[in-house]
Image (cartoon, rainbow, N blue to C red; front, top):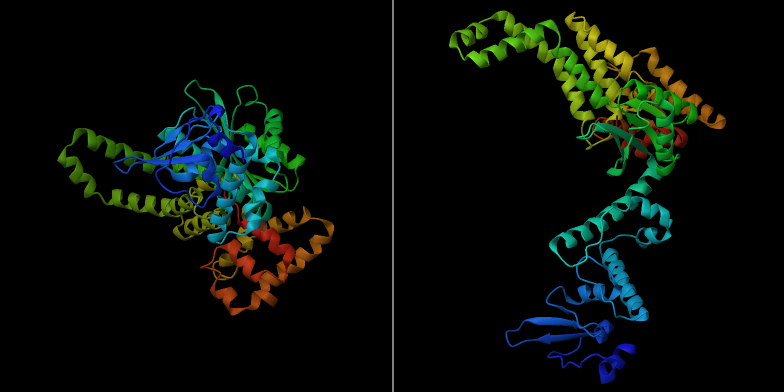
Length: 460
């Protein structure tokens, strides 16, 4: 081998070494010398470039010889065949480690089978460090983690779909930027940030930008598109609906809920209370505090605020977290608000207007219908025509042969027939996540099962 020749021939330009400990079983030790000084400190030396490493073991030196940056500088004198051997050895070690952890070999090899452009699309934009450091080590680990996460998320998108989110904001120079993120059950991943200064006000240009992102993530993968509620984004939603009939668009539910709360804060009674409390905090006069505490009207207003805010805060908490898909709960949350409005005889037209103008979409109503926790709660289930209308509109977008199957499956699901008749289907509907419930009990209606899982797996 070349390594042995370099070690034995003085004219190779490499000084010979006398290792103080015996060789290891790993064949890669033939290119590395190990020394131990009088204090017991171990040093590994590259036989090609004489670089010394005081820690990390054989794997770090393999990375050095394989030309992998991050934990150690790379060897510039190693031959191509030895570098290839080192890369293969590191890959074999990684495969064995994953196999011990119970990861199927098919999943291990998925990276090798994926298109190079796909991997390049997901890789983080971190520059390789030029010398070993703590920062370099962290960056190297971040790269490995992000690439592994991207592979897992990509396979999830293909199975159950994902939500493409466009988050508009402005930087310190007031430039409009759009951050693109993709949500699925396995997590959220950042795709890219775009300077939208030249296209922000033009719906057609925005549509082209979002179309590019949809194609990048995969048209078959994207089920739902979420943006802000600005007029340009509303126009964008209509254009995308024309271009991609199967792609649903809606404004961000969390953003809409924040606007609802802001509207409530501007109501005369609430605004007066906030103003009064602010005055007390500034003057710090005890008599004012006493007057407010003893004012029965103040407590009535507080009770009113709590009753108005509580259901919306609960819905906001669901919509503003990534712990579970929030789309199946948006319609039900607003339905509870309207039920309380009727029971309390309080006209909350301002909230209803916001719901009608922003969040009343077929996608939310369809998710409500397909959520078994609400469908099988007959006492509280909403019988509004818009729910069935939403399902029928959704059905019309499917292939001709699938429409009849979906319609028949909807009846079976509503009447709890066949696989839905199991006692466990009813007992688990409120304790199991909706998409998981469909995986267990929707096997008799595969077409509706697939559609339900894709819808119920999305965020709002």
